Amino acid sequence: MVSLRKGARLGVEECQNQFKDQRWNCSTLDRDASVFGKVMLKGSREAAFVYSISSAGVVHAITRACSKGDLLHCACDPTKRGSSKDSRGEFDWGGCSDNVRFGSHFARMFVDAKERKVRDARALMNLHNNRAGRRAVKRFRKLECKCHGVSGSCTIRTCWLAMQEFRRVGDYLKLKYNGATQIMINQAGTGLIVANRNHKRPTRSDLVYFETSPDYCIKDIEIGSLGTAGRVCKKGSLGTDGCDIMCCGRGYDTKTERKLEQCECKFHWCCLVKCKECSRIVDVHTCKGTLSSSPSFVSPSSSTTEKIESQNRRQK
Image (cartoon, rainbow, N blue to C red; front, side):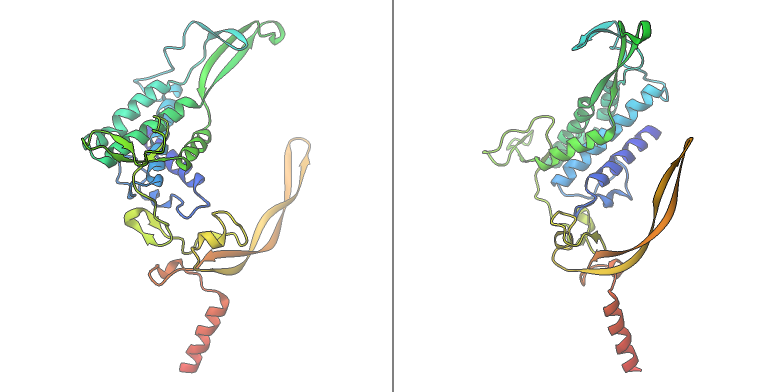
């Protein structure tokens, strides 16, 4: 269970990293960092990414625990024995190859269990995206080798297969999110078909969804949206982190802050880096809220505050 919890947390953290500059920033998953909990999302592209990255996180964490010897029922990949060859020639299998097969098998049994009890469109969609997440971890493995011989001449190589950093999996699944395929359930209710006949049939590595995404501008917990009121944006940026897009046309407030940062760093032999602490004044822009938004999200500008105080004095 410890490894499962680590995997779920790993998936949430990577989700928040991939969407940190967009209206939906995966923050709704903070209170439920679990692939077995109730994820409050429609059957949208975002839901597809959440399930795939969560499934991938569980595979990655379980596999890592196997390689470290933290779990009693698995160890290094037992199939990587004897000798093999690559573009550089022959090598002997050695070390500890990550047992991704076991991690994927365990994640499939545990994470998919709830979805297999129901055979509706959402369950079929989740099962497909869970599988895509598992396949993404398998995709990003690399051969690591150690040379043996006189003066490291590499006459003999011992190699093992290792997972790459989880960020590679997140970047890959984000690309799949951008190219996700809209699907619908077939008439028999037994499988998924493409909603638009002009689009290609998704592969097992692609992400699928069946509901269009909301704009995520307004807070709506049922669809997994906290809204963008109070979110920091970049003035002048034309991307999704720009105030025009992030604030959904509601405008933004600006306040001045003093930030401390390290500067004038120097390297001292050996082996220390010393820096000074400098301060600079920066403008921070945050999206305005709406009447339906919680007041705690709204940061009123100084001019608004002055008007309120002036009205209070006149009333007195």
